[in-house]
Image (tube, rainbow, N blue to C red; front, side, top):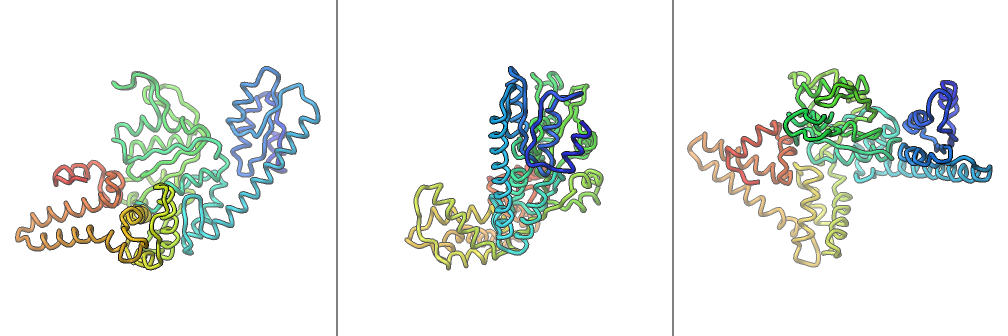
Length: 422
């Protein structure tokens, strides 16, 4: 078997005929290893009659096709020809993706600016590897879209993509969600539950807002990464895991490490490759293509052409700061599509969509400066500031906490204290 592995690594064939019954071990292990490799050949599994269940399992693990013994030479020839055609198609798609990445298109993301084209080209190269990736960027820049596309272009694309928002759950539940639990591990554990590591199988695990994890959970993730195994809460036996880790945060990892809020050793494990998504205000040349794309999305969503989007509207949208980044722009474009009352959506229509929010901000500022009491002015400023940030993030507390640099629990307490209605 070791000789077979050496030959495969040296020659990297396009197609492999692999018998399930190998001396000393079953072919499933070699299949999983081969399908997880960056060069990912087309594997045709061979099983004995009556073992069709194993063949289905092989397909789920990444095999291209399977043959059942006994078979004839014409059957093998046809299967190999189809596998070669499939490999040629994969190579053609990969080349097309490389070209599109250079032109500013990466799955669900768009950007013609130099910074985005460079990001897409790097991401395209990284996707084919199995390296852990850390995605950095402000809230609303598209970190989750980038993570999904990295998985879609990887050798694990036929396996599951499982995501966990580390800031959306109380600390007491994060470990259970990640590692799972056995029945009776705690009061509400009425049945055994596999965690995200197990659910991902041999696919990708995306840890969103990873900077919000407590140090205890960080230590357990580090152990899992180093040992290749996890232990369910209440369990006693290690469970082997083989996932690719992609993480994301809008916080500075270096600052968190310096302040003792993030483990340096885990950072080095998660950040084999760092991809940074620049904020929209630093790449305004991307706004026209994004606006056009979001306008087309709105046309499909509402099943009508809507008003004509004219250049002056796009120029007006380019002038905005977009503190909520691409998510903020998308929401505004959809609001413009819905609220525009004339045949053309122009700069005046954009101003009309933005005006109510501006008036509210201006009135709130005037009222605050008219106050004589500093403490009351501060309270009102906090309330208005947090209310605005909540609106920018569509009322999502976790994303808002990221954007303003507060712990999720602290933000919830502030919302309650200030009587904010999101």
